[in-house]
Length: 220
Image 1 (tube, rainbow, N blue to C red):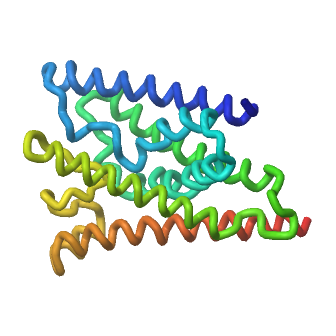
Image 2 (image 1 turned 90 degrees about the vertical axis):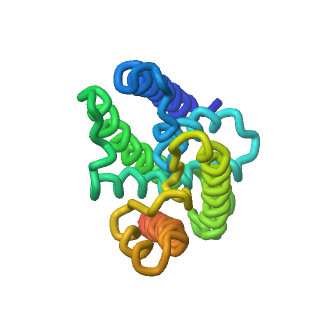
């Protein structure tokens, strides 16, 4: 196991342990022993704890590259975007609120570390760009898979409990800032589609930034 994989794996375990603590506090201290599926840990900002713990066990370098690219684009975007509307980070318990803020700050740090790591790892083909767009394409496919998984969870659980994984459950009106206006004007499905597309576009812009940085580093 490479050193960076060990570091990320340990970080993933720490995230998992803190998430378990959060779920226990939400269930027994906030909700009187009743599990609230609204807080089920499968949001865009929850994915790093799964990806980091899985990273060392992947055999394919392409799969590892895809995870690192996901962390430095989609996860980084999620960590940054949440600070434009912090209402979802506030909980009845101060400890949970602190956990939420620390979690998202860590997402930003992990995203930056992943990008810098990708820029310094040996390129497979020194003649080509260090971050080819094909890597981002694979990452978009991974994001699409997660969206489908979130949708499946939403459809299965919604008849019994309140749940809105990835904030794309059609049973609930879109509540994300800006996209709720789109949903109100031309329909909830349009708001959800715009949200997904904007997430991909924002991540693409981050990837373009890291790619440009990599080119400048290569020239020097």
